Image (cartoon, rainbow, N blue to C red; front, side):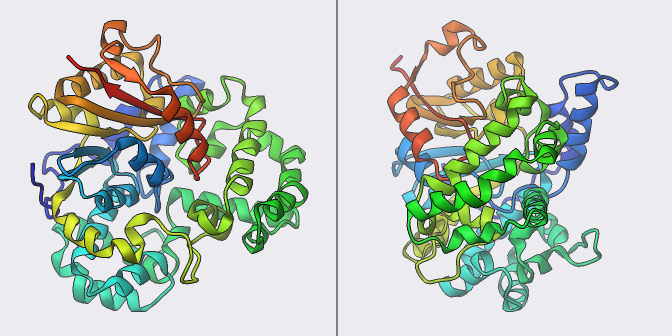
Length: 419
C-alpha cells in the first residue's frame, strides 16, 4: 500500500502523557515500583531520543527487505525509519506514543524531500551546530510541515528558546538521552576522565587500552556503584522500571557490572571510525570528517533513494497494537518492535502478537531487542500462538554480536511459518 509522508498525527490520538502511562503503569500508585513508573512516565513526556539506538544495518540484514515489503516500526528518533528506505520497501509506517518523536520523524521526512541537496540534508542532521540550518528550515522545511509538527518545533523549550534552534546548537545534546550522556560526561570529568579521548584511537587495540586504563576504573568508584543501583538514574537511557529489572535480572547490585560490559562492547568491539553510536556516546555528535560513520539515511550514496522513498512513509501517533487492529488480515510483512516488549505484561504481549499474526503475510519477519539476552516470548505467549513462528537463533545471535549500539542484551528474529 502506498502511504503519504504528509499525513498528520491522528486528530483524536491520546496525549503523550496518557499514552505513556497506559504503556508503563503496572503497579499501584503508592508502591515503590508504582512511584518509579509514574516518575518515568513524567520524564518520558518530552523528547527522549534525538537518535535511535538500534543498529539499522543489523535490522535490515535480518528483515531482508524486498520491493513489496510493507514495514511497521516504532518511530523513536526516526533514524531507522528513514534508513529502511535505503532498501526500497513498498511502504514504511512508524508509530509512537511520544508527540516529540512524531514531530522529529515528520521533520526528517519533510527535510529529506524538500531540502535542496544532500549537503543541506547532511548539514541539518549531521552538523547540528550550523546556523545555516535555521535559514534552511524557514525556506525549505517549515512551509511543508504539518501544523502540529511545525507548532512543536517553533514552540519554546524550558529555556525559552525555540525548539528548532537546537539544530544550530548541537541537537544531539538535547532530549532525555542527550542530557543523560552530557551528565555522564560531567561525572567522568569530575574523576578526571575525558570520554572523548577514545575517539582519538587509531585501532581497536588502542580503543581497548583506553577503555581499560581510563574508562573502566570509574565503575569501581563507590558513588558510581551506588548510582547504578538506582532505577531512576537510568531514566535518561529510556529504561523504565520493568526494563531495569530485566537488565539486571532483578538484582540491582549487579547493574554496575552490566553497564560496564555494555560500555566495553561499545568502546572495544567495533572500529571507532565505523561506529556512529560510539561517536554519539563519547563525542555527543557525529564525526565531521568526510569519511565519518553515519546512519545509512544520511550517507550521500543513499540520498536520492531516501528522498524518493520518503513519499512512501508515514508517522502516526498511536499504540502499535491499536494500529494493527485497524488493518485487514495480511496487510504487512515486516515488523520492528525495538525494545518495547520489555515494558509489557503477558496480556499485552499476547494481544500484540495476536494482532501481528493476524496481519502478517506468509514469511513475515519480526525483529526486536531485549535488555536481557534471551528472548522474552517463551513461557509468556500462549504456546499455540508462539508455535506459529520460527525463532531464527543463528541470525538472532549474529545480530546480537553485530549490533554496534551495544546497549541491548539480545537481538531477536522471528519468521512466520507456512500456514
